[in-house]
Amino acid sequence: MATPKQARLISDAVENHLKYNDTTFAAYRKLRQDILALNTSITKELNDNNGDSVPETGRVSPSTLEKLGQLDIELQKMELIYKAHIDELQNTLQIQKVLKPDILSSIKAQLESISKHNQELEDRIKNIKTIEKPLWDKITNLVASFNSNLATATARLIHPTIIMKIGQDELKREKESQQIDYRSLVFDKKELQKEFLKLTYEKLIDTNIAEFLDSNTRIFDKFIDDDSKVIYKLPRSGLHDLDSTTTLDEYDELISKTITQIQAMQNEQESIKTSWHKNAEKIRKIDAIVNGKEDEDVEMS
Image (cartoon, rainbow, N blue to C red; front, top):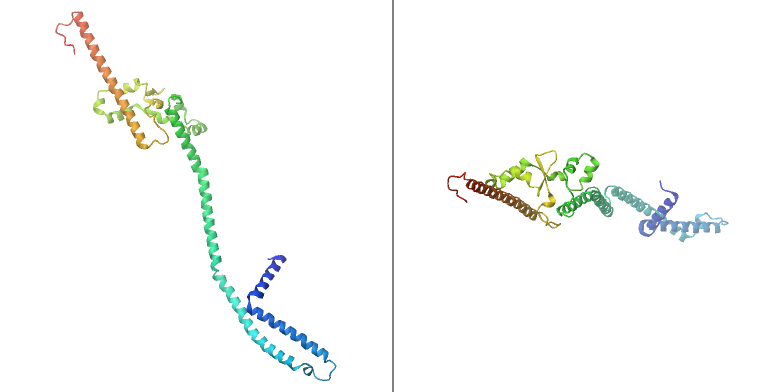
């Protein structure tokens, strides 16, 4: 329901449109004005000749009567024209209800497209704020923590109790999730032995890998209360030359270098052990010769 002010505004808009754009209505308005003017003229003539004894038709001039006849014909014509014009307007309104103007359809389609795009942007922004941004922050913190623990000067002391307590408190676990998961540094000795044997089975066939894992405190720490596990010392690893530009291939290469270092240390330990056994055998034979316990010639290798 329109307010009085809105009704006046609509009425003025319609009147201006009919006055300046509708030629049929303009012709109808002119005919009405001509009829009103003729009626005024006839009324005046009748009043002026009111005292005459002639009939009313005789008191109106012939020219006025002729004009009256013309206007009567024009009125009949205008009645037909105006009725056809009204019918055309009604038909147009019915058509417009079914077939919207192109400009309105285009604007509606554009509005729907803009609204859809705006909703997609809002969903994207929400996804960035609630999912991608926290995930990015967590990844950034993990990388910073990893780089920090690679440097011996800034590495956090990884005590077995730290690993054993992770996960007991939900809040603490969430906080720890921003750091390196130290549980990933814990290895089972049997699994390590299998991996070493896969790498260089022939070289390690006579090596006591379990003894090596227990004695090599440079790379591994013992896991308190569980002799079947060891802790890998991340700051002592050979993976120090890392930064944000390090690629996966470079990571693989550094890991291979670390494995080579471990194998070299194993070989060195085996060499030292063999040399020690040889020297011990020499000392035993020398001692036997000195004490006269060796009857046969002693071959010193």
